[in-house]
Amino acid sequence: MTACAQCLVRNRAICASLGPAELEELNKLARRQTIQRGQPLIWQGGESVLVANVIEGVLKLSTSTPDGREQIVGLVYPGDFIGRPFGETSAHSVTALTDARLCSFTRATFDQFARTHPALEHKLLQRTLADLDHARHWMLLIARKSARERIATFLIDMSHRLGQTNCAGPDALDSFALPLDRQQIGDLLGLTIETVSRQITQLRAAGMIDTPDRRTIAIRDRSAMAAIAGL
Image 1 (tube, helix red, strand yellow):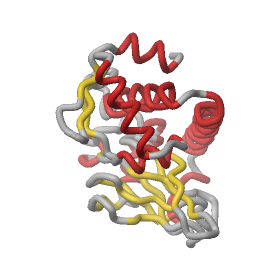
Image 2 (cartoon, one colour):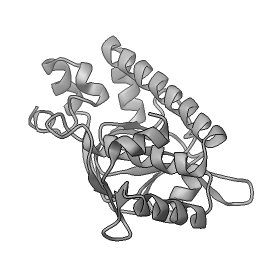
Image 3 (cartoon, one colour):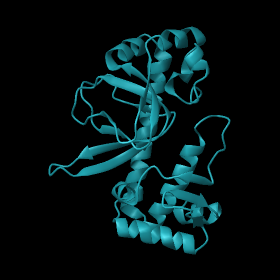
């Protein structure tokens, strides 16, 4: 129980639905692992052999086009669940954008545990539906919003997700390091790297953000940013 009791995301991860005895049982099946920035964890189309709770760090979900190009289709933050339980193959590749810590399980072992614990299965269903809602929201973002609206939405969303690492943290961070470079942001939002750089420059010129260095974003006018994002 020590590892679970000290877990930074235990109140937000899917195992939050379990009681003390169930957590102890699940803890015995877990393996804590650290992966380095750039290290792949899961491969698209590969056998689904593991699932994991993200404790620290940010990872990307990506798919490959027939001509070999990579498309980033989502980001995974602390408290999120990765892998494909009850599935034989992985739909996406998962790669660390930053150094990350995971609480991982073999997929077969986790599936067996989940089948005998309805609360965990229910939490998995809730998480799946939330991911589906987020995917639909992202489709709207890409299809209907302007470049500035996409960038503003992305930065506001990231400030909230990174601020929710644990229940004692702020609701949103006013300053944070981007885990993606400009090209990756463009891939995620359907923009060119030049457009991403131009929109960030314009937001900075308008006094809404500051960029102390190329990776750091400091939000100076959250209400104006939210208005642009339509939030």
